[in-house]
Image (cartoon, rainbow, N blue to C red; front, top):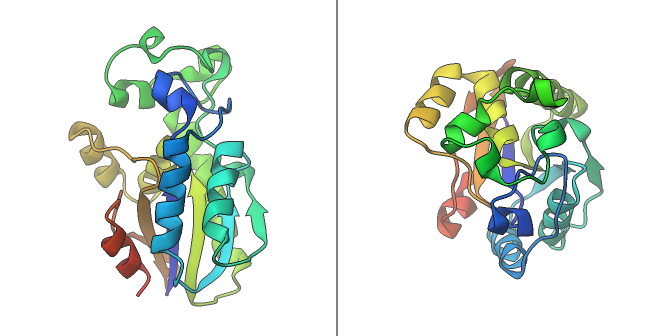
Length: 205
C-alpha cells in the first residue's frame, strides 16, 4: 500500500489578516514556522519515499522545515497549488462573504479564477501523476499543499465525505495531516485534519 500524507502549510500573514490567499502568497508567520517545526518533529522518524510540494512559497517553506529530517529532493508540483481566486486574490474574505463553505464552493471563474470542480480535476491529475511516478512502490509520500486543495483531493475520491465536511464546517487546519491510501488501483481516505502530534506519528506506522 502507498500512503500519501497531505500537510497543509503553516500559518501565513494572509491567514492572520483573513485575506483571500490562493495563488497569491504571503510569508509564514512565526507561529506558522513553529507549526512547521512541530509537524516536522512528529514526522522525523517516518521513512519517506518522496516529498512533493505546491509551488507556492508558503508550502515550499513548510516542506523545507519537514525535510530537515529527511534530506530528500523536493518535487515542485503546480497541481498541488491552492484554488485560484483570480482578481479576488489578496482581497479581504468578507468581499465574498458567507461561511468558509460558501467561499470554498463559490465560483471564481467569473473573476478569472477556478471553482471547486476545476480544482478537483487539477488536484486529481496531480494525485494520479504522483502515484504513477512511484512505480508500484509501497511506503509513504509527503505532499505539502493547501486547505481547499486538500479538500478537493478528498472530493475527488468521495464527494459524500467532502459534502459532510462542508455541512459540519470541518475544514483543514494549518500544518494538519490528512492521509490518503492507495492500493490495488483505488484511493481510500484515511484520517483527516490530524493536528495531534502522537496521532501524526502513528499515521505511517
